[in-house]
Length: 220
Image 1 (cartoon, rainbow, N blue to C red):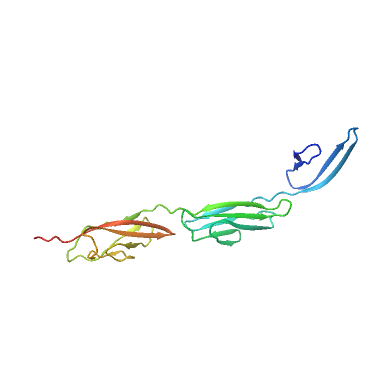
Image 2 (image 1 turned 30 degrees about the horizontal axis):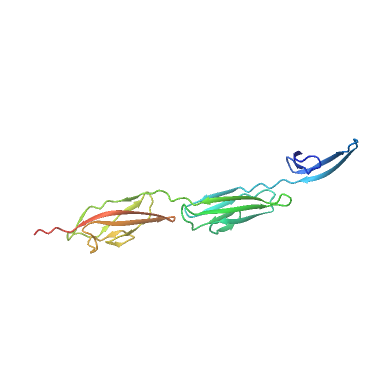
């Protein structure tokens, strides 16, 4: 072994490179040169390795996974901070979180026997941010309110995602299908702002489309 600390009467701190049984000897010499040697066999135990925790995140969910620590009698899970989740065999999952701002801190303890006892790892994970996406509109030509004008279908897409959006604003008579009535009495004579909202994995994307509606001019 290696003496890390101690001298004279002691105590001494001694370490060994691996677990097992070792014999230590104490030699005492008095002032006239008489020597006495005592020996004792001790058992050295290796501490448990610390659990290795991995985490995987989406915009709304965080899942922790960890390994079985060799020699551990059991594993104990402690939620340090965050929303309670569901515990399973070597995993802990938390859902219904907010994108980019929610986090969960988990402690995993490998339960070991004396004298070394337990080993512990603490890990914090965050939800992912919402991806940067762009809303694309199919342009709407300026509308003159002649007798032939009928309802118009508004079209918008969220990048390449095939997702339905919800329209809002004056003149919208079907928010889900994007049906716009140019003859709505509450429309401005001129520019009108219509809003489309897309929701995916708790991420909300909004943008506006300006539609110009003009009354038919009257010649006096």
